[in-house]
Length: 128
Image 1 (cartoon, rainbow, N blue to C red):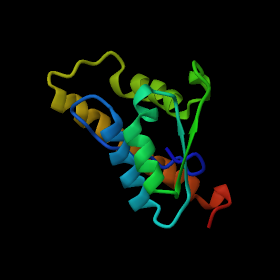
Image 2: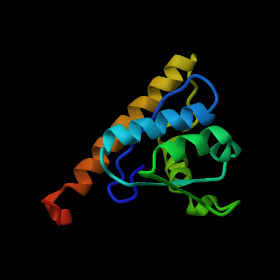
Image 3: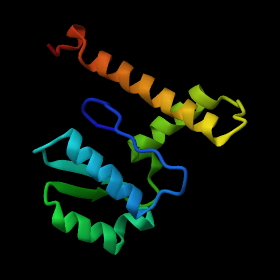
């Protein structure tokens, strides 16, 4: 999630999140923000500090990683977003299949991103 614009950049996986999925996300961010310095805030998951990530970052100097202090979910913007997302999207609802569950998440992310972009780019927000 872009801190300034609240734009959502997501990757999807049917498996666990690991270093390879982090690299996939970094690549997507590089393509969405070409030529930009990317300051990425991470929450200290073990895979975020592994050799594969260190080697990738060494090859991509435009990516700067910053780590939140341990045990600080209140500082983690995505944790607050997921709390909201779960209450809005799932709200005790059951998905019969993983595909249905994933579809709900993807739809929610798309709608949330669209709403955030509309709000941020609104003339009443001072952005023209």
